[in-house]
Amino acid sequence: MRKIVAELFSSLDGVVASPDQWHGPYHSEEMEQDIQAGLAAADTMLLGRHTYQEHAGFWPGVSGGLADLMNGIHKIVFSATLAATEWRNSTPASGDVSEEVARLKRQDGKDIVITGSVTLVQALLRAGLLDELRLLIDPIVVGEGRKLFGDEGGRLPCTLIASRVYKTGTISATYSLTT
Image (cartoon, rainbow, N blue to C red; front, side, top):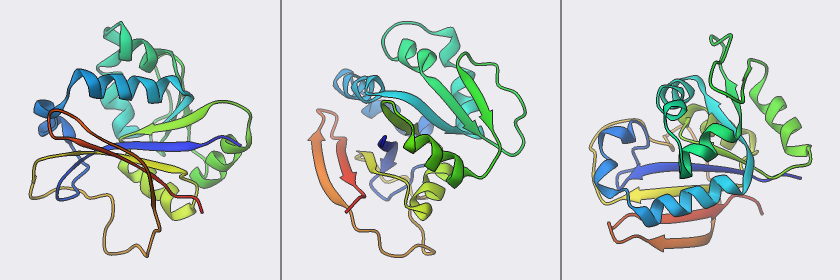
């Protein structure tokens, strides 16, 4: 069975939305190498519509390193409104997210990765389909914005399986969500 890994940038106060507005000063070459290693371990990427449109507006025009991985990986885009995808290796999906992801998870292959796509990650957390959660926690308090965990959720036991502190002060923390 394949492993599903979500990777999100987070502020110290738990904001995961719009990292393009605050993450930049904390990004580093060592972090980029770790992100590339995570993508290289996967053969499928899951995206929500919003994140897909952001990525599709940037990555196709770039090459080398991370861009080659992003452009080459098979991307499945979950959206009720997006009927077609133009970014290479992208496929739209509009069915039940939990059923489709459970089916993908049972298939042979490498890891399945999710970058950003907070709504999708939250749905997979609720469905118990996420195996690992990797948070890149930047040393900044954003003050407002969408958080991954809200008041509506219950307890979620997590086991820290890897951590690293980058020179920029960002903490990479990877948690196993399986028992």
